[in-house]
Image (cartoon, rainbow, N blue to C red; front, side, top):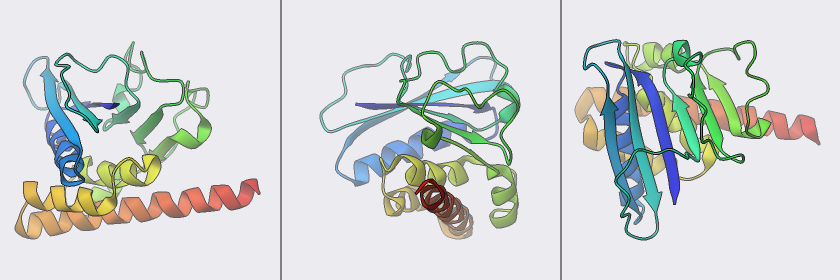
Length: 191
């Protein structure tokens, strides 16, 4: 089972991101579940959502305590205690930030499994609003290889039909391309 925990703030599409991941997994013939965890339900308050993906039925119903991947939609949450708790030592960390904040070079995951990407900037460019969720799903696809970008795009269009879906599709594809190019450059430099 592959478990994902998404951290963000109310209004950033944290819950929608988990839902779209689960739909993308379902489109690939996998089992999936997605659900949120709310504190105070107001715009700007910290929010978490969870997604599990497996090749067999999922019976667990509790929050994801040992994630294989963390998606952090708001970099102001990086200081929260326990944010990285339970992360698998070979896990993935995806952060919405155009630069790596100081002190995060020693994250407890392999260097090639962590990524900082300016998702808000890409969302503003393609969607016209600072909603990083679709951008981060495109980046997640390229970083982890767990879901195909085509499935992510189809899930985006199911959630957001019409022009909004098209804009989010473009944002997700742009992020996917940025991550693919960055990883190819890093691989070429390492060899």
